[in-house]
Image (cartoon, rainbow over the protein chains, first blue to last red):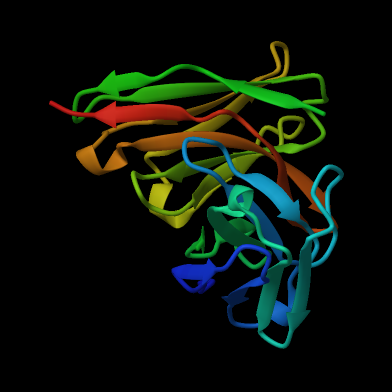
Length: 108
Length: 121
């Protein structure tokens, strides 16, 4: 089955930039989406189609992709950004959703 | 923006079945996919399957094939996820999520609040 790999954790100082990667076979040919999940809450999409941002999501959140790695970047990180982040693609071969392993962002 | 509202917490014994519902408010039902995603305690997100209500045909992750049934009732605009032969490792929060299509690819633009299903003897 298709696997998306993320680092388990990322720590960042307030005001700095957090970078979360998502790697998978042939990710470059798929659209990558990113979700933020805070404890006890449902996930919320923060980036869709690699780099688009839903209304209401701060411009501090951005997405990019290069080769087989997608990246979520959070600039000027604050305490409110502490959460788990998951990448997601749609496996068109199996017509299935696939989530990354998840990354916990900790603000120091 | 559509809001997905799910049924409440449930406790089941091993071997039993559970049926979780998901109803969208403030948006359309039929023209999107409704997907089910589960999250075991302290774990990541796991896609289980989805359905396009207007077509009524569901597809499932291989892991859940044969044990999970996803349906959608267009007359009431409610989607359901039923799982049978429950085991303790099915204890999880179950989310429904609306799939937004771009070509043949989907992302999940709205989520239910989650339903905790506890399987315990």
